[in-house]
Image (cartoon, rainbow, N blue to C red; front, side, top):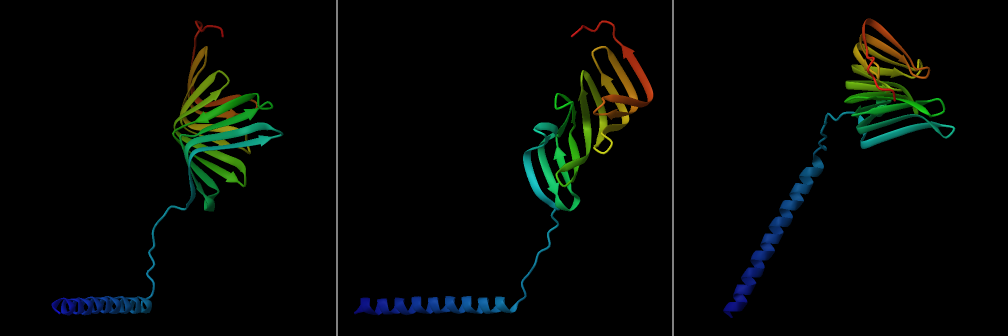
Length: 194
């Protein structure tokens, strides 16, 4: 008989506990329904996409026109711009047989639809054009002018010369270099023919 009384007591205690838990859940749900929903505002950059190992190529008649590679890219819908880390932008001309390569630590690509309008590269900028290597702190490419411009100090190294200047403009397709001011040139006669 003692066992039966113990079982009955345990059953009453468990039923009372379940009823108490049910009551607490019901009052909590009713209280939550009466409150307006909380919204949290979080300041998140407007980047629509974040891409690692970014690569984009434009072709025309099956030949490359330009190619962009970067370690990372963040695309901003509202600005039609892509911010890239460690970019390399390659421009192809003469039916894709010749090229100019512009690289640096970071950059910004401005687009109109699928077309690359402007590129700005900064941080250890390097431009390779034929057998010349250009170095600057910052450079930009303007598609409408087909022009790469570097506003500050520039160094140019080639097989037979070293040049320093303040400011430079490179017309990409005709491969013409215009040095703006303070040009200093060193010619090397001991350069080996290649």
